[in-house]
Image (cartoon, rainbow, N blue to C red; front, side):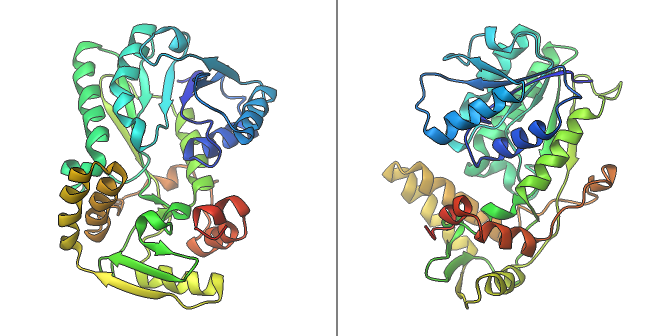
Length: 319
C-alpha cells in the first residue's frame, strides 16, 4: 500500500495533474507524505506560485530539483506519479531509472488517455513516448523483482475534447472533424477522473502484481460527434457549422509536419487518425463500479461549467 507519493508535472494550473493535486488537498490523510517535484530553474507565473503556496499550506512538500536523473528527489517515496505533457514524455525512462535507484517501486506513467493496446494506437506517433515508457517499465521489471506500475486509462477528458487542437473553433462556432458524425469517443470530466485516480492510489497491490502492470479503465460515456455538437449548441445557444473530413487524408499531414519540424502539427495529425478511427474509446468493462461513491458528471454538465469558467474559456479560444 502506498503511504508516500511524489507527483511530477502536477503544479501547472489547469493540467490534469493539477486536478489530482486539488483532489489531494481535499483529503490527503491516507498518505503520510505527499510531495510535488518542482524545477526551480523553470519560470513560474503568479498562478503557479500561488498554487505552490496552496500546496505548502496543505502540508505537502515541494521537492526542488533541476535534475530528473538524480535519485535524490525521489528518496523516501513509495510511488511516483508522472503528469508530463507531450513535450516532456521522453523524459519518463530517465525519471523511472533514477527513482528506482532511490527505492521507488511503483509508477503511474503519464498516459491518462486512450488505451495504447486498442487498434493502431501502439504504432501512432502521438503515443511514441508512452509506448517507449511501457516497454521500459516492462524491461526494468525483469531486472527489479518488486517493480510494478499502474496504467490509468480514461479515454479523453471532456474539457479537452472541444479545443482547437482537435478541430474546434468555438469562437466562430465551426469545426473541422476527421471522421463521421457517428464517430464516438470515451469522455469523463477532469475533476471526476482525478477523484477516481486518487481512489486507485488507496487500493493495495495484489500479491501477484509485483513485476507487473495493473490497469484501471475509468470513463463516463461514449458520445458520438453528433451528440457532442447537439450538447455544444444547447450550452452555447448557437449552431455549429461542422465539416467532416476523410480520416485517412490525415496521413498526409504527419510527414509534412515532420519535414517542417512542427512537432505540435505532427502530433495533431497523428491524433486525427486516432480519433477518427475511434481509438480513444475505452474498452469495457470499466472499473467505475469499484468506486460506487463517485458519481461522474455527464458531458453536458461538465461543458456547461467549463464554458462558464474564465480559465476554461481561454482553452476554448473564447477569451
